[in-house]
Image 1: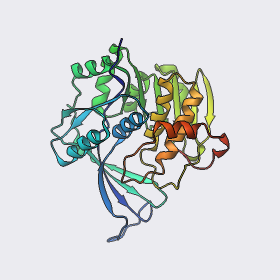
Image 2 (image 1 turned 60 degrees about the vertical axis):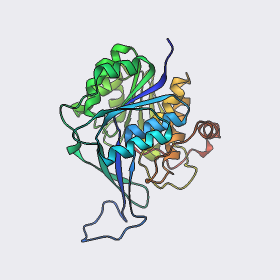
Image 3 (image 1 turned 120 degrees about the vertical axis):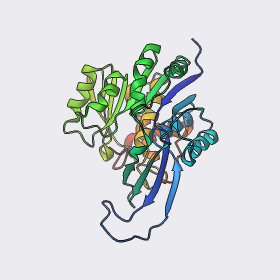
Length: 311
């Protein structure tokens, strides 16, 4: 069957307001004078992932709920400027938004506006079915409307990936995503026993591969029942922000996976893409290109050290 897209991205469109702070945690004070200041830009998890796979040459389509508001205009402009097709579903609550506090070391604290979602939010089944039927793969962000789209995606036969982010391995909200996906990403940040959680996902769900990112420790890859440590990759420039690095890792990994590469090579791509993302200022939503990814991935493994994808 001829496909129109390689990757359909569901959910995760929104706007971040970046606030640079001198420390995290931020000590209480009446006021702070900050530089380089406060910037609002489009780019949340689904946006970052869509831009990431598109920059690697994969035909990409993004669908999510957006409001008729200035934040929605920023998201629409981002996709238009980067050439990523966007199907928007009207949200009466408005476009998702967050505030990211970023310290001088690139660490972040994200504050999400939970008023911009409603229990009744849904992605239209017919639209999801038609887009998935025209694609090879679907990447699902763990937002509420996307959970309801999972059965529709499974009906179409596309492969599915998801990123559970800082799941603790117990919160039931994440389970539908974890168990429905063929390729699962998550962070070790909140996991008491990462290997146990990874193996549980593989045993109870459909996942062929589970990847857990672990900050400076690199990542852990579970494939065919074997757990392998993937070293971190040294960033090509100073680390300025970790926001979007996990999405970049997933995009790089998926690029290799859809090309039929072995899981370790895919993880190498992910590590390179994630390290690159850490060097991109928080005020921008830029991704590594295909040529640079392949060149960096081909470099000797001796440059694997110290910094990498955040957990």
